[in-house]
Length: 375
Ligand SMILES: Cc1ncc(COP(=O)(O)O)c(C=O)c1O
Image (cartoon, rainbow, N blue to C red; front, side, top):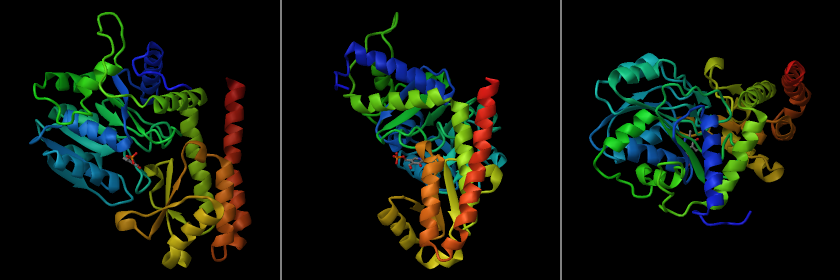
């Protein structure tokens, strides 16, 4: 599509449509819903710069790389950071997070889908704890939006990334903030410390030209072509149906988990805490000394990228993306066949692994067939 001007009325209409789709994806009616220019980390910086001021106290859950990254970003911004830490590979206890809050705290932050461990963080109970403390509930849903169930009730601010479960190129951070969070922001008299990520200014560009609303005003040049892409990606997600898509990711995760178990890979997270879009498995002893070489061969010889462990899990786990179009049987068949060739004793496990994979997806085919019959 042509790269039209960012104030062109046709582009304004596209932004309106995209904002509406993002609201549906997040499951919110928040007016302040937009795509921040930049990758997921720009969404994180926008959250910090607009909703936490120097000297304010924030409780941060850390049981993986991305919680630690947020704690770092907040302390660089001058916040008083209270870390509630937990084992990498488990979610955090909601009671521990809640009881770390003190009245007057600015916010509580958790990573909903921790990509470094493949763990989903339960949110139940956090909103009421935040309410009692007067704090905002803020989440990172980079690896869950569009791929895993997300209940935004009581969540004040959330950011995601275009490139994970939304299956779009990287470069935009879907972002939403509740009216309560925005009221607090508009009540601040100090300017936002980031010029580029100043939501009050950016919203004067994103808000519609509806009755009583001033016309869109230039803030920075919108990444026009990326916004086309995200709009298209969001439309595809919603065409599939959010709930069906969550279910597809869940089936893909379970099927691949069963297949990889035949080669000796065991999932790190317990069943109830597993994040469907990211399967994190322990590396079997047979390749423990050389796991990076196997991943390199997967990439160079088979064109399949599997990520290694991060932080304390480096060398111990593999992280397999099960997101977007990656959550389909075809790429999983390719991975299983490649592992059968590369792993010691892999050939012997090949048939059982492929059977486990097919069995996982057979259940899905039956389920979708009955769902469409009853529809
Ligand atoms: C959970 C989580 N948060 C934040 C980020 C940062 O996003 P980006 O790399 O798009 O800046 C990532 C990236 O993988 C992530 O997985």
